[in-house]
Image 1 (cartoon, rainbow, N blue to C red):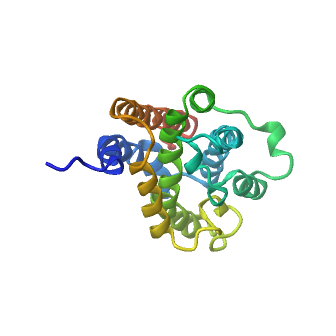
Image 2 (image 1 turned 90 degrees about the horizontal axis):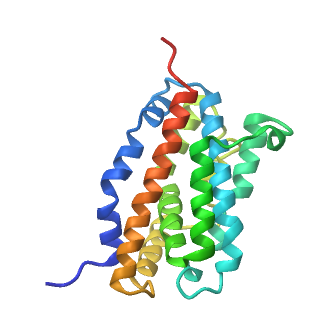
Length: 217
């Protein structure tokens, strides 16, 4: 039997948790139009803390044989997030922003693996950026329709990858890089486990957001 490609293994292994995140109470209420733009702004704000961790560590990993192939300038999201937050929260939002407890834990884990375990960083990179290029586009469309953001404009720029002309081709190339990951099978299993950890950390953030933005009785 031909062994499964690693990109297939990692996608299959995390499918259940991916589905759980998409169907979480917070995301269901947000995308179902039952929460206001303030909840969307808070969600975007929490993403900023996670992506600052991911992208703050990326330059040090650019030359790494394992993580380096995944460090791509066209994926960077922090500047777009900051532009969205300028629009959503107004001037000076950085001084007022605080991570939720689960967000702080998530960002700390990203930094930890980036500094000690490059393959673990790849797990977090994969779960975030391929999600942005896939399900993230659904969020963008719903946000535009629900809150009247200009198409691909301020408020949803996080989801707009100007440097990627063909997202489908880019995702195929990304999966090819996963398949060529320069680690042994034991290490690949650890990467799969870290993907599950990443989804669990993201799920905890969504739970914190749900607690911070309950539906009105």
